[in-house]
Image 1 (spheres, rainbow, N blue to C red):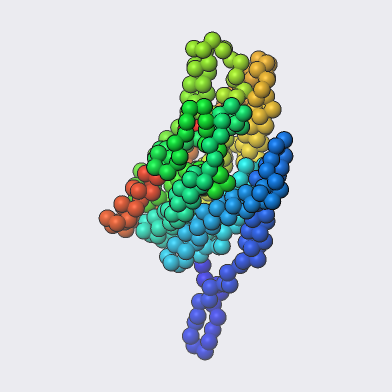
Image 2: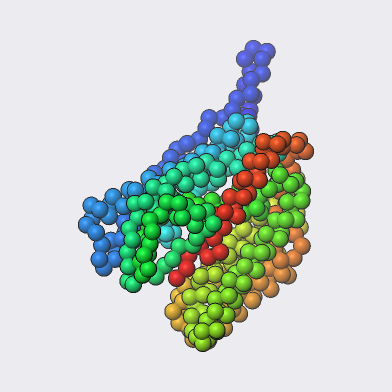
Length: 389
């Protein structure tokens, strides 16, 4: 958006305000430190760890690989926005040391005003994921070829999720793994996995996520209805995932002994169901400030986030405790949250995920192909269980 006018004689010149960068640079430096230190502290906290110099090398390898992918993703959006003359900020990277296994929550770009055309919307929405994957795929290839094969017995009890794309890359590039052994990801491979995981989340075709932009550019107003289905499918997937684990245990005669583990393995979809709802409410409020009214919100953002965080913490603390009272209380809390969403939240009729209009100009054949390929990457990157314990 141009700045106030300045006059030079009779000529009126619209000046773009200088691009702010100091806050962005400070957050980026903090994120570099956070991404570097998170795996270093984790590795040094193990009973048996490599020499400190090697651990520091692992941290540097992980940070360089992950930040290359994230920077490419965010500057893909930024450059596309500038090409289409959409007023966009530099990326704001978000450090999250220790609380995140990656040391960061990624980054965001602020865009002021509206995106004028469907072509611009597609270019801005698709450029980030495609630019990030341009680096993530070769980094993963290099990372798995430099990963170690270790005995399964004694390996960490955390399994990273597999997508169709990761299975294909493993088939092409990963070393053959003998029976009783497993692949211990190198720092670069783990960083590339994290980059693909973040891309999967961003490509969810709902709301103001990258996938929502791309789907709206391709399908127009039909995407608003599809977004509701996609969002509610996330909650359904939580219950389907949990039920499949419990059914498997029941068939093995284990009953509900591992219910805590199974809730935690499925929790990702419940958390993101609520986080996407928060993003929808925020974007709805932004539409209201531009004169597009929405119906009143029934659940505050603070309540929604507080309830979700409380359920996540409670589930984590109770993971290894199968006592009925713990999990009866947990599911009672979940039932209360769902009841609130049904009465006055995202499980009743709403327009929180309606995308702002972006014109009616056709995309053209090339951009239609780009949109389809971008959304196909969501299918290829989809992980039913991102992390399994």
